Image (cartoon, rainbow, N blue to C red; front, side, top):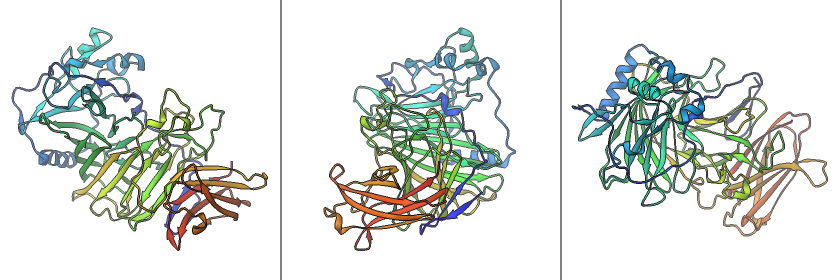
Length: 524
């Protein structure tokens, strides 16, 4: 496994040629588009006659008890539900007139997903009203089903596969679906005017390890009833996995952008040396810098264009994503980062030319840590993929110190779903990266477009550029009227190198004028 320390950011990059990772199939059943829903007529799900006292501490205590006991696999739903194929499962629909709080003046409502198909185990769902939690039960008429037998099986199981939240995010007279929790610890959200794209995860464990990845699961949820005027909603969850249990609180604020405040308390059953906080999962097939393996009429296919990092000491970093020929792992060493995320900066139809996927409306996701996350690194995993239905990009914060049993581990962060990365005044963002040959065809060339950095004169800028192998033949910067910024050309000779790490930063009088651009070039 060759490794190379590549630049002053202390970035460690590794290319794993023999390791293959099968990505999870659980997201295949997630809802794929926004559903516009009007006012609901009734809260028809049955609840327990008497509730139980509930608070945030209730969830923490349950997670602690869970971690103190041996891990047990949750029971599978009946075979009649597990054997359903994709088409049959898609015909199971939660009845619109059964939406939780649908008949109330509240702006929020909740709809549930049925177990079955890929979702072989169920989760427990509760609502919290007046400090009391009440279990939500499935009735025979809770779902529209292809056959009465499936409805009876669902009522027998009494559990769900997940849920979605609705709120009038785009129009005042419609409750739009804007958050989904379904499958392991995955969840995703949209802001106003967006379509679903990348996902977040409650926790990642052993991503891309040769021993296999461990997928924690949210086993139980509590949703607090919002008041009629509330513009936010709170969801609690217990997470469970062979080596850890956890208590999560999600403060969810729909809008522009939608925001989720995440607070978590973990209780380890065993030491966790490779754990991912603030995990994001996305899809990247090709773009202008990493062309398609097969001819494609679309100029780009991706949910996210690049990884953006705001380091603990204030540097802004942009790393274009790639669809590699072999699994790649990159580690960006830092201390208490200010933020990181997977960003979709391409926002025009012309950037993709896809009438159905509408990639230009996919959200970005930005993780802003709360408190001191200490030493560690942001890990980026890029997985070879031949299908845009697979999420092949994963990124997260990996603490340097393992999480040990015997004491709780706290972390929190704010997760937003904006169109673009939050910017810093005077630091120009990268809006396009491309690879090709110089006009004479003799040399490799990289082109990087920066948006307006507030500097009108290209001659006022200098380029701090380096590479881990080969040599730079020419570096050039010129005005780019289309971006009201600048275009950088970096011409290079790779020599015999099969892998080169690039680092580039435009500067003015020795201070950064644009994002630090990083790229891994691989000979194909």
